[in-house]
Picture 1 (spheres, rainbow, N blue to C red):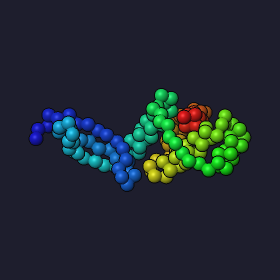
Picture 2 (picture 1 turned 90 degrees about the vertical axis):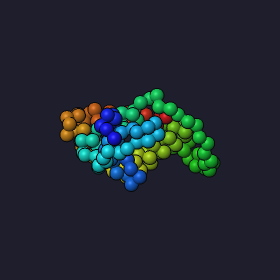
Picture 3 (picture 1 turned 30 degrees about the vertical axis):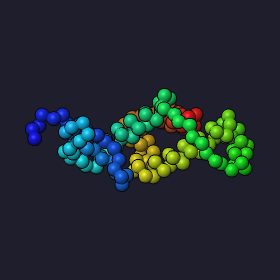
Picture 4 (picture 1 turned 135 degrees about the vertical axis):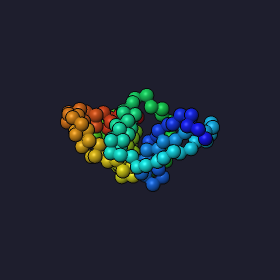
Length: 145
């Protein structure tokens, strides 16, 4: 096989949760050949985390409706708590709870913690005010959805 095929690079997680940098070629429409794969370096981890954060901050992400069966007393408790936490209703509070739990699990299983990302942003000269604003935007974006 010649070297006339275009090489492509990709970054993403394997099934074990390791962030990998992979170079491959497309042989046919449904076949690829991996040239090499390695653990992502810290700069690549940072770039991936930043890309992921930007993607999450977009307001035009596709949405889907789901149906949940939740005990009535839980819904009533959320209705009481929502205004105290500054939410307009229990559904927004439920989204917030879901987002909080998801962020914790993503941080735990992805290997790229929010703390490490914030440290890297500071190291690259991003101001504390901008980091706080981005974090607030991210939380509000996840809550509004």
